[in-house]
Length: 214
Image (tube, rainbow, N blue to C red):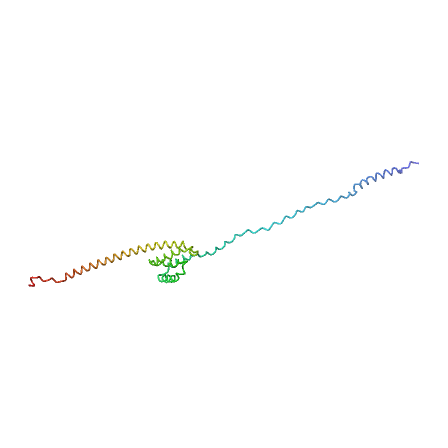
């Protein structure tokens, strides 16, 4: 009998190994990869909120300049205003004003300046002397109400003294003119008397001679 050509058991084992080896290789290549561990969570750093900036203060607006306070009218200011008023008075009105202030002179012991200012406008020696006496009385008053007027009173005193000197000078000149006029009048009277004598002598007829009378 011819020898059997069927493969033996060993042969089949080798064939199976050869067949299974590539399959095993394929299986190893295609086997799922082991599961990866999830990535570690990334810590997200959230920046802390910046502190809120304080609200910007509005720029200071320049303060409006305060209205100046109304100036207090002093006694000197009132006296100067009165002096300006009496300077513009006509003579008749000035006379009435002096009479009105003269009636209240006793109540003006602390402030006789208005009457002195009015009297100084008449340019009369008697009124100048009276105004000067009032001013000097004011300067001698040491009350608190009179002291603020002392500088103006001293100024008025100097003016009144100068005015009185001028008035005295004018009065002397006027007296000299009156004396000269009186002497002139006396000389004219004497001259006229002499002329009258001359006229009477020329107008008298000549006396007859003694021989003719015999």
